Length: 293
Image 1 (cartoon, helix red, strand yellow):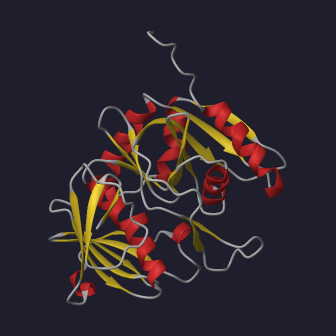
Image 2 (cartoon, one colour):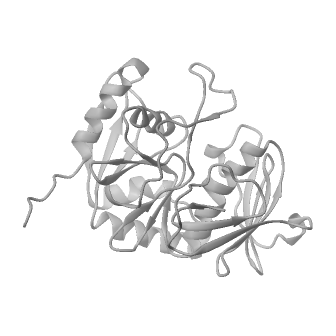
């Protein structure tokens, strides 16, 4: 047993990237399905989620009496019962692929159903705050997380960020490790790299950063009000339809009422990334209040 997103994960399947720290928020169960889950599909909520999949792979979410059914042609099927905190898994393909699907999509989706704010994003700890980097695949979330890890900054999550409402918007650490590809091999499978691994505690959210297309040099500018909400909403993780989108959208609006948002563009030249990452963190990290303020 290990933990993810503040919960103890009691799993029948091997989940090697769980954290060693205790999960104070409760227990979630992951069990192997003893029957074909695909026969249980009801109304489709989301037909495809292209940005997280290799070309030709399909992804769907359906409502079923017990909750949600997630199906992925590459990694199998998953039934989520958010009320009971259980996930049934009918895995397919390589173990590391369906493990990532459980830890980066299925469990975050369960927690979204329970009221947490969940973003397709990476998060690192910097000066006691969580910096959250959202954006589509290829914008550099995992690469940026790896750069920060090499600086000694704890990585809270590299694909799927859960922000709970406890004591303000807190980022709860997800799976350990960072999935990376070899430079110049965009089509190659990712491998998990463990750099300076720790079991960081949850930390307050310091900033939400939307990563845009890369350019010649680092660019950072603030996102305010409705513009921030509109720009970040496509990166919410939810079950689809009004029932899923409404609470997720409201949760994002609530967090943006307390946390600053920015848009940023990283440099194309990876040799410039370490300095750009450090400068990005400096620009978006809120100033600390003076002691006794």
